[in-house]
Amino acid sequence: MRNNNGNNRWTVVAGGLLVQIVLGTVYAFSVFVKPLEAEFGWDRTTTQWAFSFALATFAIVMIPAGRLQDRIGPRKVATMGGVLLGLSFILSALLVRPEYPWILYLTYGVVGGAGIGFAYVCPISAAMKWYPDKRGLITGFAVAGFGAGALFFAGPASTLLLPTAKGGAEAMGISQVLLVGLGIKHGHGFGIGWQAFFVLHGVVCSSIVVLGSMFLRNPPAGWLPEGWSPPRGKEKHTKLDVDWHAMLDTPLACMIWLTFIFGATSGLMAIGQWKPMMSAILQGQSFAPEWMGTFGRFVEPVGILAIFNALGRIFWGKISDIIDRPRAMMMMFLAQGMAFMMLASVESVTAVFLASAWVGLNFGGNFALFPSSAADYFGTKNLGINYGWIFTAYGVAGILGPVVGGVLFDSTEQYLIPFVFAGTLCFIAAASSVMVWMMGRNHLKELGFDAA
Image (cartoon, rainbow, N blue to C red; front, top):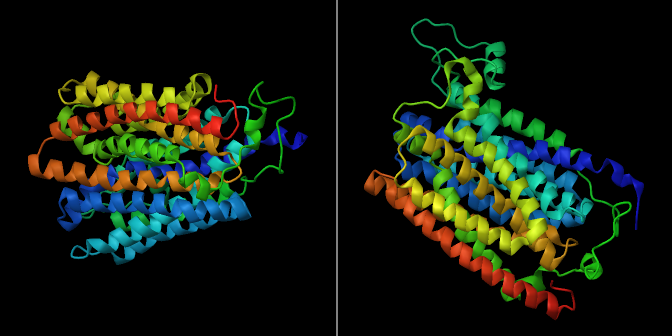
């Protein structure tokens, strides 16, 4: 079925980007680490558990969210996610106490993670259904906002999270909060405090996700882009339709899942602590010259990581359209493993800059390659729930990465061992990618499709 309604299919990508930018602020969790530790006297492992609960819940909720999205469409499900995410920050501000860190795990971790899970799957599934002709590239665009969310969030959040004014200084007004929040102005050495910030952020999150959700929709059944036909020999791939029960019975799905765990664990171990980690290496030095003012945050470690996290999703998505997903995975994981091994001896500002870019670029590629692989091998009709099951690997990685990284730091008070551990996992992921390639070919042949 061909339909000219596809002429405005870019609106789906635009709406998805809005949703994903807000959801991607979870990757700036490291900006909460020092304020929470200072406010409540918690250690690094305690704060990292909140990040782990959020990521694990995000992954688990993707399963029912994906199934619901396949049934009722992306708009309603993404809206539900936006409401839950906003509510999680508001509840955290009202309920969290020093002696009860588990409340943060329930509010930010479980409720917030559920909100991300409900909203995250919708732009990916909708975009791939609208773009069978550019599956890898468009998946990269659809999730690029998730990688870029930390870029827009980390700098303003770091300022607004500072304690409120003391000693008679005038508190920040609404206009000042707005200017700092947009990244236009620096603060004056104080902010609005973590509680007020959580409330503000919760309201903003809900509003933007609900707005972006209004642009999400699925194409009519059987829709194909005007003037496009599947490549010769792969015409039947558009009819590939494997439900989640059958998918989970395949060794291929298990191997994709394990590869995702190895690759994501290494990245999340670093991202959860990237700001304090890089600050320790830089020892007060800055990438940004003074003339850049507030825009200097774009060339600080968290900003660079976020920029290349977003670009990596597009870059590796496009590469995978050319050379196929497993080959792209292997190249990406080898490059990431070498980066982590080199980070063990990084000391210069230039090296930290390059490391932030390289780690972000390769970590971001995970979120273009794995959903595209699920669509390649199991079809797009049930992609929401199929990818939801595969994405549980991210939940496992979300616990292993931040928590193991936090424990290793608390026990050694240095980052050498976490870097080496992360690099080793990447090399294992590269080897697993070769297995995905071999098993994927056999899987498609068994279904009667061209595996070339």
